[in-house]
Length: 123
Length: 123
Image (cartoon, rainbow over all chains, first blue to last red):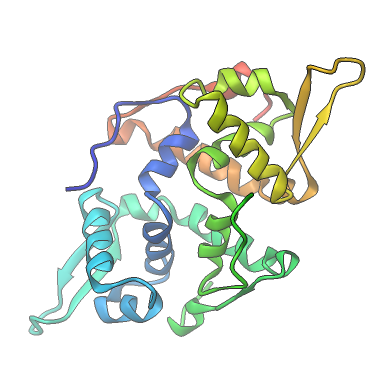
């Protein structure tokens, strides 16, 4: 079960970060904002996560109402994930996170991959 | 010492989240984007943090080059923190986080405080 949200937060930022729920969930949302993805695609986009953790994080996103999970017609094994309207409301924030990372990595002496290109995504 | 950044990240979002460095550092940056704050002001804005943890988080922000720490003239005990230019580059992202939290808390059945009002801040 996903941790229950507190009823009150001291600050809107604390609340927003609690909903985003840490690094991997935010990264997954960032991919899903581009288009619905199958489990297998997400699997390739976050190679450092184990299957167990990836499945858990996706389940938490579904339980929090940010992501919808559906089986594709006629293919019992193909499961696709997409943002719900609530998840879509994070779009601008997620775009800003990705853009900041892309623009500032070099000034920290850091290289970043470009996984959204692998999704064939519009930016 | 602040954890050293990896040299390479799979995704710009992963990198951005690593720089932000978790909930409390992001919350502190969110206040500091409004105006420089004294330690005592920050102390009141994040009452749930212990002095030890608040001091550590501020030190990490300074070490990562996002925040500057200076002693105010003639008052050895008054230390003020402000965003560096690198910290300023996060402004839009921090504003978006706060705004999303403010706009969506009610739909999650959550109340949020309005600490920026206590800073007498422009939004």
